[in-house]
Image 1 (tube, helix red, strand yellow):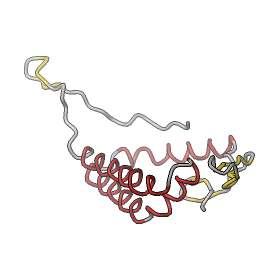
Image 2 (tube, rainbow, N blue to C red; image 1 turned 135 degrees about the vertical axis):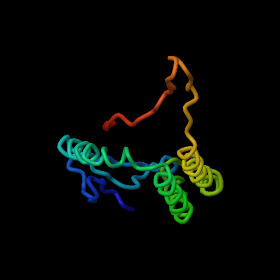
Image 3 (cartoon, rainbow, N blue to C red; image 1 turned 30 degrees about the horizontal axis):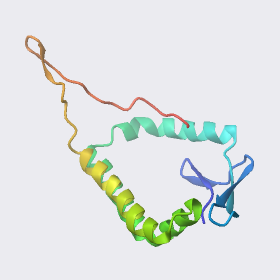
Amino acid sequence: MQTQLLINGQLLTGEGPAQPVFNPALGSVLVEINEASEAQVDAAVRAADAAFDSWSQTPPKERSLLLLKLADAIEAHGEELAKLESDNCGKPYSAALNDEIPAIADVFRFFAGASRCMSGSAGGEYLPGHTSMIRRDPVGVIAS
């Protein structure tokens, strides 16, 4: 199982303390994952901030295609992801495989479509000769 952090296109081991992830059904440790250090969180935010200008200008078609690829990858790795979800949450494997994975892939497909048909629902003529509308633009990066 991959347990590293993806920071600026590179997989890195967390420099913070190791945190156990338990299988709640068995009480056993599935894996230990090192948390990100403060410096690694700062590096991830800086990398995301550096990518912000170009990513925020990515056309809806390209964003949609990336979300569809992600949905396809989730389905392609569905059995592996369902096993991980089952072990991590104590949920029956069949429920994770047949309920969770299709629903997760569907959410990405929904937003792939939604990203291509956003509208200015509050548009209108508020000043003579000028059309006004609400425009939603990305505003920046956060770490949470």
